[in-house]
Image (cartoon, rainbow, N blue to C red; front, side, top):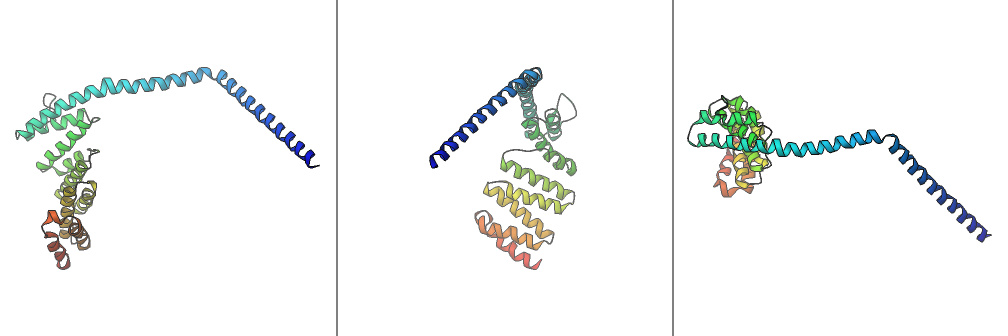
Length: 235
């Protein structure tokens, strides 16, 4: 009886295997029919994808690359004016003959050099006392370089302070203090955040910043953090 049971089991497994392969045959047939029926549409979709890929590489080669070259030329001309103390010419933006940092950003904002031009233009606007314009330009800059991002947030904080928006400035200094892996940059903006927090009577926050300096950055601080921590107790 046990043997018959085993034969029955084998027979059942054999049927299941046959059905399985029949299902595979049906699926294959259905796939073939689908491809036959929609071959034209699928060809169009495939063609569109190929064109999209080719278009992307063509854009990178024939549009972005030449733009980068022109953006660099424009940026270097503006930088030369800035080095010579010609801030107005360095800022530019008034003519195609002298685009300056502002014109370089406006014309090549989709390039990294264009974004860096926005950063430099923002600094010049800040220097001229145009704090909101400075903030808006600085906000357009981004970089994979963490130290540059820390400097960006710090400059934006200064612009907010110039607009008497010191709570927002403190928030930006907090960002600046954590954006970079460079220890001196971190120390510098942590200290600025602590001093601003102290000025805003946010003593608990100020103590947090100066305690961080006391713990991690004494080499840069010459013991000043201890004095600031004491100040948080009385001011």
